[in-house]
Structures are given as C-alpha cells and as structure tokens.
Length: 70
Image (cartoon, rainbow, N blue to C red; front, top):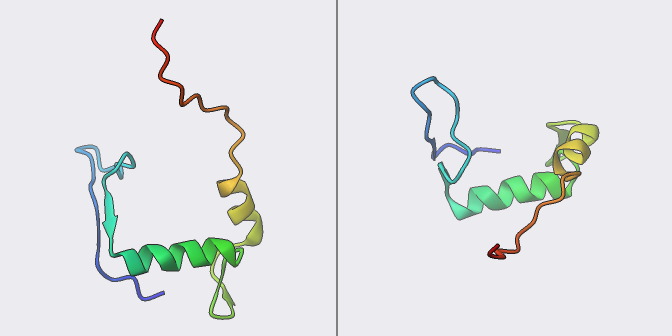
C-alpha cells in the first residue's frame, strides 16, 4: 500500500496507544478506507481476509453518546 510516513505513539510498556495517538497523511487514510471497502483486497491482492474485515468492523457493543447529566 506504500504507507511510509506515519506515527503511532507507544506507551512506556510498549503498547500502541489507540486513543487519538495515530497519525498518517489523509491519502494514506483513504487507502485504508479503500482496503476496508474492498473487503481486504488492495489492487487485486487479498491483504487481509474478508472474514477479518467483517469481524473488525462489526460493532456489537452499544455505545451511548448521550452526554446526559444525572
């Protein structure tokens, strides 16, 4: 996919921090979006399985975005 310029902030324990600590060029985000839309296929080559794309994009947890005060 030729994504070469990115930054992923790593915690002191060596884990990738996922809450807003990953940066890449907009064109490279578009490549990832295209990969997902094409069910893991990039330029005729299956980079990740269709099953993995389905599982990783299927949200089964109810997320409440209402900022109701109690």
